[in-house]
Length: 188
Image (cartoon, rainbow, N blue to C red; front, side, top):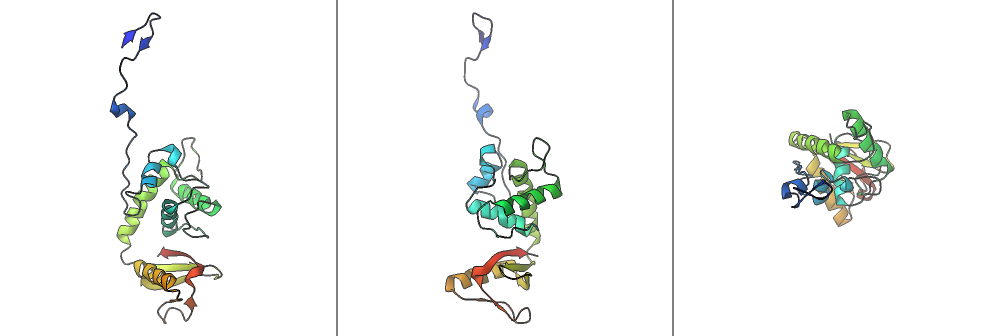
């Protein structure tokens, strides 16, 4: 540092690279780790998820919220709307995740994505033997199955791809279900 004529300090060299680097928070869950938009959400305020956010990364967060017990009636669509705001707010309220003003808001920011990442990582690690619940538009109740979550996802993907109806084991339901009306698949 050197002093100018008015005796104010001036900086001679730019700040070091360490001072300019953004803080690094590595996401750990297999769902979120390595997804650039979610990694950015963990360190950059401008990358937070809020109403109007869209994309596959939003769908990943929505599915994680659903799997952890939050209701998103439209399912994991990739569109962050009012039902996703309500789910994020409920998730944060249950865990007392407060913003910097000390309030609960409907935004998935640094604290929320870190908590969600850690919790969904533990959930997935414990969930190898979990059953699944399917929610369909037009049905008042969810359909539960003894099939594992991954089996149900494969079954649904095949039904959509082949244009077929979903047939669960006969001892669970007599119905055939339309995959086009599927709202969500949840681990239970």
